[in-house]
Image (cartoon, rainbow, N blue to C red; front, top):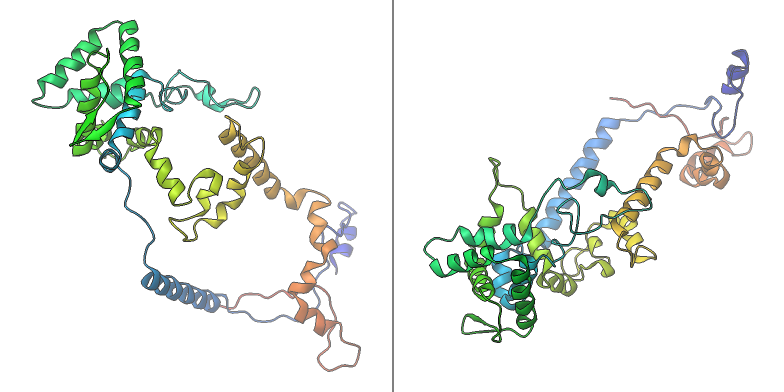
Length: 346
């Protein structure tokens, strides 16, 4: 009995619809060894992966750390450090989930970051600068500078950091030391110079990774600190990895990367996401909506009929249709329509 007859024979409880129901298959069945096909495909993929890895090796560069950054570009590190101290860096003024110094991304009333609030608190002045410097042993000059800065009023701290931030824009690195034009910035010069030396030694990486957890796997602080500077962005531009270069789709250099991310990165290249301060939330919302639509395709009348209307299945099953549509009496012809059901033989 066909699906249509079955539907009508059940008391007409559900009407037969071409875009939802299919006639029962009356053609022949072809044995198919699913396990054999799987093992063959697995073997081919393993050989390809191992072979290509041996021939081309890995394109990955060494990871960027605060130590490598401060040694390669100490002036950029110092310029970033002062913004961490005065709270004007990208992280310091970001807002939730790190602090309350900025406005969380939102689309109208939809503001999940604001709803969640500050659940990963970061005070850039204490967490990135003053706190790590306090762990340095046998450095009374830096310790005295940190104490003097902490004891000063907020207005005095702001005056010092503003003066130093202006001066460090013209800083140079000479003979292994940071050279900054003279100015009235109190202990801030000693603080930034001490932090730069700490970073170049590698001690700052360890200080920022310190955690109350048993495993020190939280790299949030060093990653945010590095991202606040210009060094990482310059490396990304050089390797064609920045956002306006569709960087998430590339490996380093000219190597192909995560091509499956093209749909996600696409939205960052078009207005309004291209210039929006809420781009991350907007792109996330678009992808959630598209994912829901994709999941509901079998339940959307009209959309689920597109394969039947386009008749693309006839191209995929062209050998089958070439055989079943032969003129009557031709050898090998058989009746039936639609792709054959091929039960797995294991």
